[in-house]
Image (cartoon, rainbow, N blue to C red; front, side, top):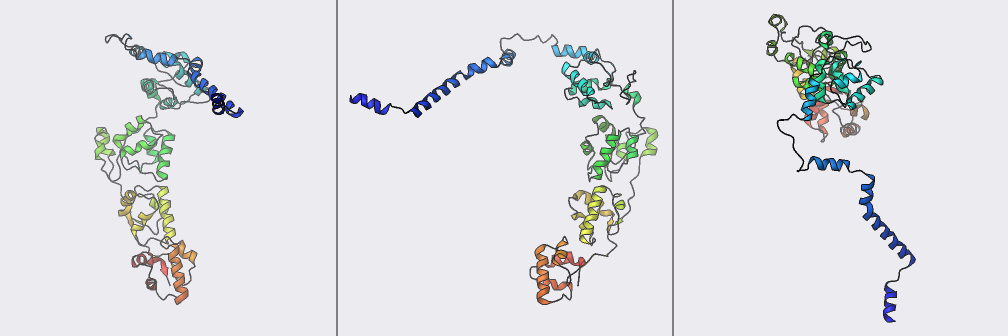
Length: 385
């Protein structure tokens, strides 16, 4: 009886405990059966394929026999022909060696209104591999009238006629010259827009930053680029003999600019200064009340030091008329608005004035212990009593 009582006391479960045990048992059974359930609903095709590919017992292709890829590549190279991607049919694309997925993407792109305006636009098809694009690129023909279904001449015959290539600085070249190089309007717009926002090409390779410039155009223009003060003789060797004598440009003469009277048109003539940087320099001049030193131009917000050093030889300070702040009448807001005067400094100046009366000279600011002499020298041109 005592043994029975012992088991009854220690093996008795309440209703809640029994329900918990049942739930745990069911969960364990489900987890044990999960691999079988997974295998039932998901096929093993990919696993089998992977296993076959790496099976050490699988027969290997002979080194002398061409692979399937080589045979397909050879077949495609023998069937290349000129085609217009805007009018080419699916069978023609297939004859060119494109996959069904790529053909479907091209036709879907065209059905939604997409048009290839130039051969390089064909690379927009994301399913088209780089290998296929470079293989087909020389065979693409178009006449920019993308809805014309007539037979079209090769692309090389319909390109805009190019002027004799001239050495040029990508930071100074204008739209007319870029157009004469055969660049598209979209590329020209992107080029000029990049410069107007303060963009600057420090070396020729930086021109690749222009996403609208194709690699082919970049390689074509590269030999004729020079940056800043570099002599243009380095590209003259690439010009025809007849053009070499007439097209090697001399260094551009740039007039010095008075930074206190200069307008935006004067600043954009400086090397490396576009409309965006010019506006920032003028805005900084207005906040200061005028430039007292050339070095203050380098304090313009986000202006790279390399750009400042490039334009520094062309800057001068002639106009010494500054917008001044009266120490005896200025409010805290007027003092704090100046870039060189912090809020706490404005508070000290007003407190000193209220305690000791009017300032008789600017030098009296040094009686305020917290104000330093080097700070006063910097802000002196903008203060008056």
